[in-house]
Length: 238
Image (cartoon, rainbow, N blue to C red):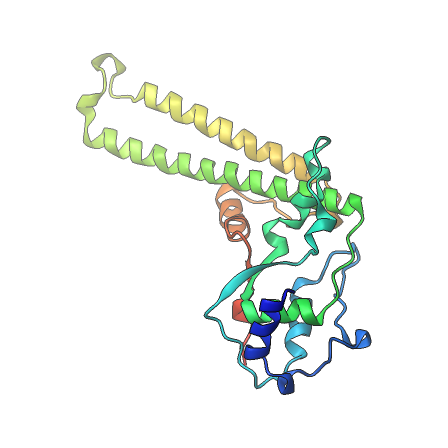
């Protein structure tokens, strides 16, 4: 944390509201980890929040994104090799970033130790698992959209039968072929990503899925679309 951030923190978070003294290394917060060596993100946020007087209200007018895996130089971008092996990709996954009040972000860096870097194999599986769920979401969403387009097309043709060639005998042959081809392509993509998911050890999968494209798109949309985890709502809850 630089001098400007330290000054900002002193102005926002008074010393008498701090329940620990980070200058004492024994009091600094140590992140919790799961059995894979990945940070318990919500646990860390809870521990940092618990290190401040519960009566303190974190200002939420200035938000920014915290990378839970820091410092950045320990997760350098590596050129060449497999994309899954890149530590920078691991650090920048949306599920490894959190939107937090700036003051809380500064206090987190002040009050806690940098996390241990997971084993390369764990980071590789995490990267691959994310790429799978992101690709699965895209293909499932496209499948759902194709289904909706097919229904809209059928309704449009029913309302405007004159657009069809006479020799088609009232059937939207061209439209049906195009939509069927799109549906088969998208559905095949869903199946392909589900198969890739099966090749990832269960302990390293981000989410278990065995549902229809519509349910997959809905479930993964909440996970994939945000650029970071919104952790602001977990503060000042009381």
